[in-house]
Length: 501
Image 1 (cartoon, rainbow, N blue to C red):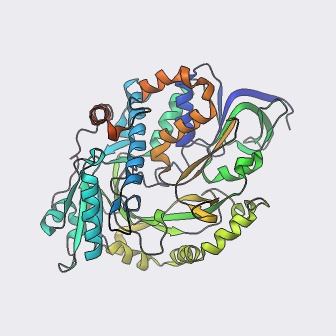
Image 2: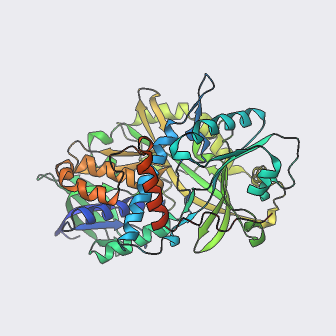
Image 3: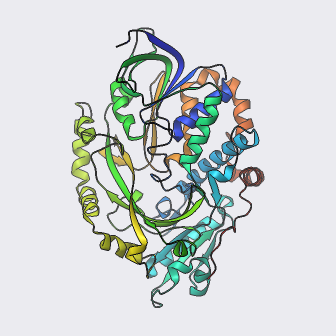
């Protein structure tokens, strides 16, 4: 064990998209600061950010039906969709700045234009989708959205889904061409390559075992290196961005803000098509409606993906349950996350989540043929030998006590927990996660470095022209932002790769 302590300005735990984004921001805003990143795996972007471990949707709320809720009076509340779309626009602007400044190159290596679609079946759902379309298409953020319940038009849009489908069943879809497919694994690796060139100290195969406050107010980390030896590192500011592993480290920090918070792990699986002829017939991300009783992160979708410059077709997710908090985690992760301060919260969540737990266990037990039945609701003639099962990443949903939900309420989203003095922040939760990394990291910067914000604001506005401004209230700025991001990220050719019927 080394008693020597290495001091640095900023420590980031986890080499995923969140740490990559925060480190890139800080290097632009305070280039003289020393930054060290600890990652327990061999490479960046191997866990939650990996392209095979997330849906790569570029969540802009263009197709996800769970972001638009039907109210008791029949109206559609699109406020969550507006909020998430605005957040995604921040990511697009930041990535455009990085490309235009030549900090990263070849945007087509991580982002591709791709239509986003919502698909529903049955009369009630078709009525809902039409109302949703009317509410969204009038909004400047969702301009260009189309609706159709005409089979011939749907055949043009999604031939693989419409072909061989019974004609009597009502079916409808919305389509918007400004969607994207984002390879967050590739983007994470590009950002870390850039950070390495800026002398950011990235330590792979280093696990953070403990974290504690020192007498001078900084944080000391006990880190196990790849030889199994213990190192000690200290910093004035620490960001815990270790995916599902963040909760344990937040608990070890002992900050009061981290108490009464638990985590519920959910695993996911996808079916991947291995027949290039089938893959070529589909060009969109098509989201359906979650089954009754299914959690929001289990919304079925049929996605065109671009991974390693190859077009792929994925269907899922099939939810599952594992007590691990990371794909590379321990079977004891869930049980060791239960502490005296969150025991009641966790027990309350357990009592409320019996139906969810039952659903997840049922999903784990599904045979391949049963999974194919779900896929055939999207592709009626899907053949079992053309699809393989891939295990995706682990997600840990936040459990906390809320006014609206009471004790032990399961949260579906991304949350930042920050100490009162801003010296430490942890990222918890799941989707929309990576897509809103820029918004989330700006929140961290605001909360943790308020004393620098006045000085940093001009540079932030240079990177993100709409920073601090509502795009929905400024159509001219929205148009400027769209033009800027389309050009910088090479998204103009939205029709690339459309299938022929």
